[in-house]
Length: 66
Image (cartoon, rainbow, N blue to C red; front, side, top):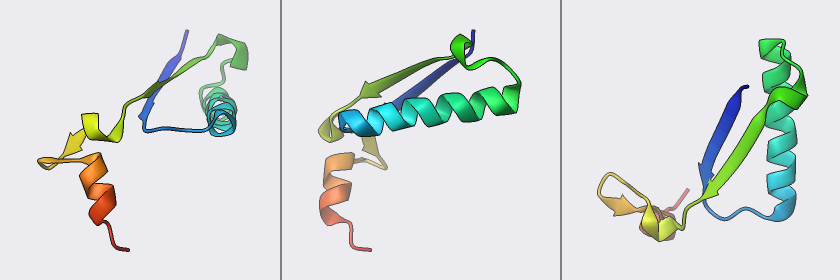
């Protein structure tokens, strides 16, 4: 049984629904496995609990200037 796990910040219920549906459809098409065999989980981590390059994601987002 294929398993897809996503770690993210806070997503809305609608975003989660769309993400699960689209990941499942795409993976099933690529792998030629029926959609009903896929399991998708979303692990939400608060931005202050996850870091990259010595800074929390929360800090990186606050200081981000595109």
